[in-house]
Length: 179
Image 1 (tube, rainbow, N blue to C red):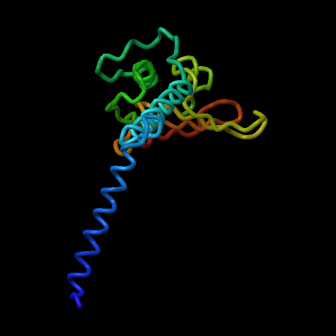
Image 2 (image 1 turned 60 degrees about the vertical axis):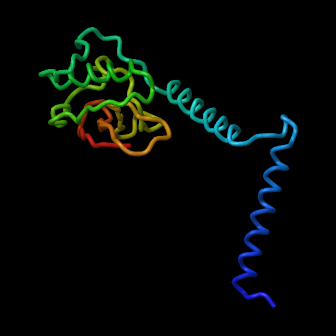
Image 3 (image 1 turned 180 degrees about the horizontal axis):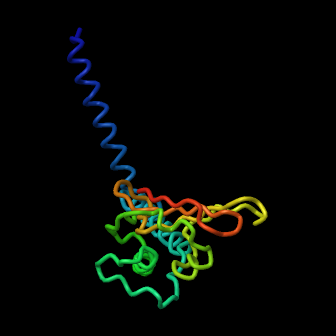
């Protein structure tokens, strides 16, 4: 009678041989059924391509204002114009381009600004949290000062949130890093 160790080794060899035969048999399928490693990779490539396409379709366009200068690597003295230049720069980049912007030093300077002034300088927000009717109190806009990378982990980019009252005046502004 064989030892338990021998039986275990023999079973493992039999299992490996069976797996090898099965793998060879699957490789001998006609081209229409053969897949290998290319199929999962192609599927993932299609998913990533569609995610980037969807992201581009949802991104707001840069504002058309000429009030703020193009971003030149330096912060502007006026925080409104600084965010304007950075948003124009970021929104002109291809989706997924890494950026290294920081939150505005003091976001409370945006308190008291009018919604029309913000929209004219910065363009449409990346996200809106507005009630169905403007008669309800307040709404929130969020501007992304960076380039989110679709389906990626790690890193971060500044999100500037503006809370407006029902008259369209910024009551609270905050900036935090998001992923």
